[in-house]
Image 1 (cartoon, rainbow, N blue to C red):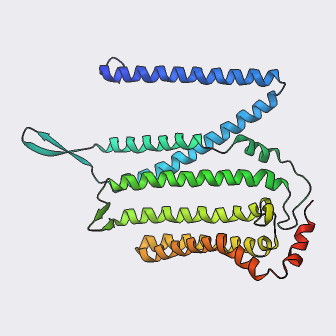
Image 2: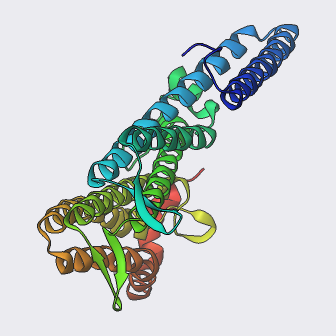
Length: 317
């Protein structure tokens, strides 16, 4: 459609969009130019190139992944909608006006782009990616995991930020999915109970299993974080951390992966109670690990605490 064939309202919209795009490009160009000039004046042009490259990689990767993940979920919702009609009234005649399929596809695409834009704003800091890309090694390893100390200053912070970003993406997309399903008859509250269709149940089972996989990921990270900040006094790494909490985190991580598979299978086949009890068991064991296990172990081993902590005291500077 040419510009002359457009309606006045559409021409106005296109004009405003073009003006906004020009202003945005001008603003970004001015910021980039000022940054380049400032770094060049400090003799740090190489640092600016590294910063620009890392920011571009982080934002582009985050936006693409978030957009595709959101579009996949929205397309799943879209396939469950055979037709969508809004009530209309003309005189004394009421009828339903069906929404064209292409409009539903456009809405799904726009929502996916919106999620991609939002998630591109909450990305990990570029400095963490730069630390990993630098590949600096200290040549010293920790006595427990036998990892170079650079692993804890470079990779662990980046992995933690990526985990937090992935969890936020999963929460945002799940909220959008549940909200959209609630607008359809596929998910409704009727006579004191939720009623869900087979399609919705399977979709939510997939999302629940993804939540459990992300939870298992967090247990892996928590095991490494114990060396950075342990459960002992003043954040010290202790006997309880080494002999109890790290193996417990590893076991819980493996168990949570198995629970994710069980939730997916049981939710797909309609065994909702199995899914509910599986998720409940994982949450109970998680709370017990964080709040109960350390205090119980310390209380039972109070008599020999000095001998147990001696090797760990010796590793401190």
